[in-house]
Length: 137
Ligand SMILES: [Zn+2]
Ligand SMILES: [Zn+2]
Image (cartoon, rainbow, N blue to C red; front, side, top):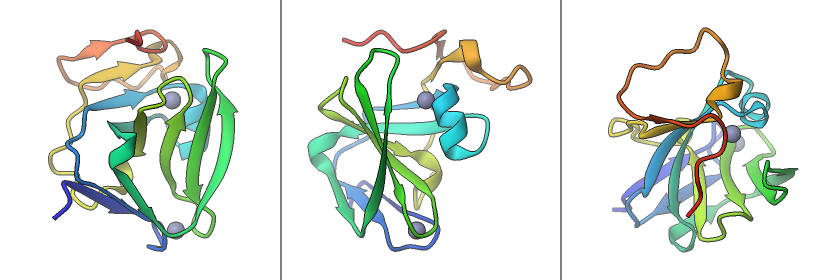
């Protein structure tokens, strides 16, 4: 059994990973709001080498705040945002947590881009809140 698995709304695009998630974060950046069509995204960071994809992913690349490319993969059939590969973090893949088969273990550890959060969004939780990008390191 993979440790993590998930898929898009129509089911043609699937992923799995045998690696444990490295981190879970809420992102309030404007690009995540647009891409997901809602107020924030929830992402699970994984070692990129552990991510196994089946199906056809469509790609739209944006530019992150650092100036590096952010490759946002989605299902071209049903439109579900699926995973993001940022050039600034070449060893990390971020899964959109709404696509997990089993989200029961999900618990954010941090929020990014709180400066651009919708003003009425207030998530309960004792975790780190970054005004913009997390400190990378
Ligand atoms: Zn789909
Ligand atoms: Zn974001």
